[in-house]
Length: 376
Image (cartoon, rainbow, N blue to C red; front, side, top):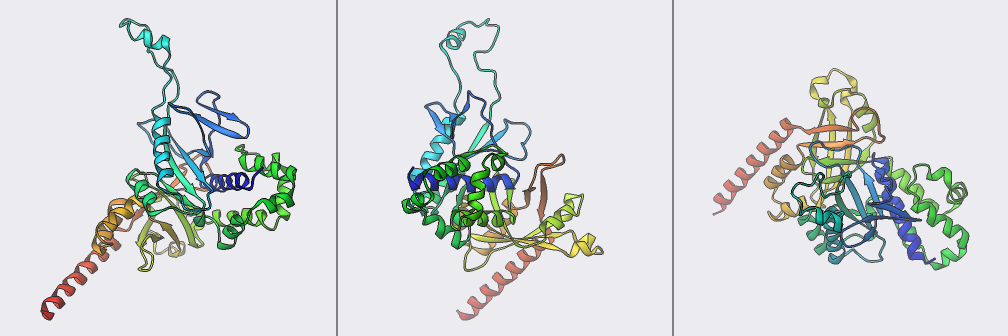
């Protein structure tokens, strides 16, 4: 086995574990539209069966439409993912969403206007969203194309610390030889295993990872990261990965029965406009409760599609406020585990705070215009 194969399987494992921790769960093969050829998992399309790196069911399905699934193509390359990769992802999205079983018999049946049954397969259909995860990030052209086609992106640097990323990059044939063929094969099978009981099915491999200073550290780094990572869904359908900066979200969220008690404020630092800060607070009407004084702070990468819109206006502050209101007025944050009640919390943008920010920006703009007129 080549080192690239193990790195690819490990990268898929990291992305899968991140999504599972946020409430998603692996799709189980139906042996027709999806099937396994161990250790690979395939999904059928119009042109061919495609290797589905990470295929997940979301924690919740929206009504009045086909249920959705999320497929991440994982690219463990040594360079940034370029435009062709994102184009292929868009083609894959169309191929699997437009796939339908059509046989000669069904075509002949269409000629009979009095046929007793429909000439289509009776099955559960899904709408597939296809994203791309890259070990080395993305080129500007790739980000632009993804933004225009609503393809979610995920970079390895979002889910691992700097040391873990360095260790991941250092996986080479020398390391493979030191591990040995048997354990290398065991690691590959474990990383590819989509069964919820994978840990208990690979006890020997788990023992190795506990002792490994390199691959084991990568796994441990992921565990620490995902404990403070949540997935948010915007009303526009965009996904955001929320990385907790200040502990307390679990206590804050689970302390209230009503989702209406949670509001949020959004900030963006001047040095990195693509990384925003989200502060979640309890409703001010509960100020008499000591619990209401707690808040939780997150950092997240703005979806490329939304970022592209803002860049069209040269990161204008007034346009930034408008984007906050348009896209982030309501955020659905998925819980860590599937439960019998709603699998998400609803966080609403603080309208009073937003009005204050808008008034302050208006005053600032007016002052700047007056100063320009005075200079003239």
